[in-house]
Image 1 (cartoon, chains in turn cyan, yellow):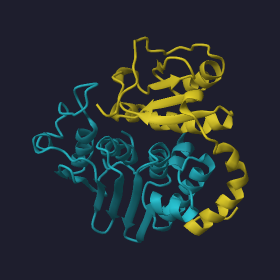
Image 2: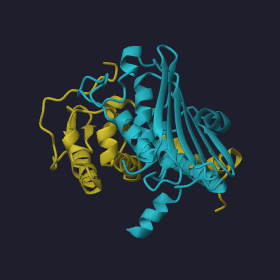
Image 3: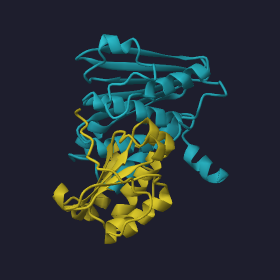
Image 4: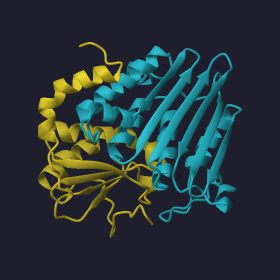
Amino acid sequence: MKELSLNILDIVQNSIRAKAYDILIEIIESVAKDIYQIIIKDNGTGIPAEILKNVTDPFVTTRTKRRMGLGLPLLKYHAELTGGNLKIESETGKGTSIRADFSNSHIDRQPLGDISGVLLILMATNPGIDFTYLHKTDNGEYRFSSKETMDYLEIETLNDRKLLEEIGNMINENLKEIEASGIDFKELNRDIL
Amino acid sequence: MSKITSLADLKKKREELKTGMDIRVKAINPENVVQVKVAMATCGIASGAKTVMEFFLEQLERRNVAAIVTQTGCMGYCYAEPTIEVKLPGADPVVFGFVDLKRADQIIEKYIKTGELVDGIIPVNYQTIDLKE
């Protein structure tokens, strides 16, 4: 995974498979405190205790198509590379909460990347799920909720591409406002290429 | 155009877009349109499934192909990621592997538009993944 946002896209797939309909993606970053946290909370089926013990073992998965799963181990690896760690709390029937702690300044802490693009894909392909995105920095915070957006616009699905594009712009503008790191990654990439 | 920073701006923008939107929001019957499923498990995402997904979402609409683009789990062909499953109306699903943007373009122009097969097909007796399993 080249960007943290791709890790998020991957981990959220677990929540979707766990039949969650309310998923919170939260990022707390602080240069002053040198923290970079990614929190993903869902109200899915939860992870049974015996699997929870070994859930970051690549050879543990609930999937039947292949007998290994690398999503959580990869996120854990990326966090540990920066001196951080991964914590998972889960209760069967209530949901799962995952928190990855990174050191913000560590050179191996990847950029967040195209988080708005990730949110758009999640919203466009999972119409029944409410996604909330919360991003806190030293300069402020920004909150986006797919349900609130749809209610405000009085629409039932977010499948219109032009509208999705505008939502992406809105998220990016707001993140720029609080100077969340990694947001210009797309543009940066274009310049390099 | 002014920047959109709040839901109110977004609503205003949507009013502008609305005329075109009514045409797109047609009652889609999944059986009658092209279905594209992009495999979005760890293996797929790490190989670029997000870019491929964005390409299909954008280009199918731009090229006026009535289609539903969704995501699916790992199909078991991790070596060939990004993989996509394309189901034309009335046909069996076909799985394509190693889908970069060039191949994605070919898939739309040749397979989806004319039914002509292109490179990268994973030849198996394949059944759609049941996410509930």
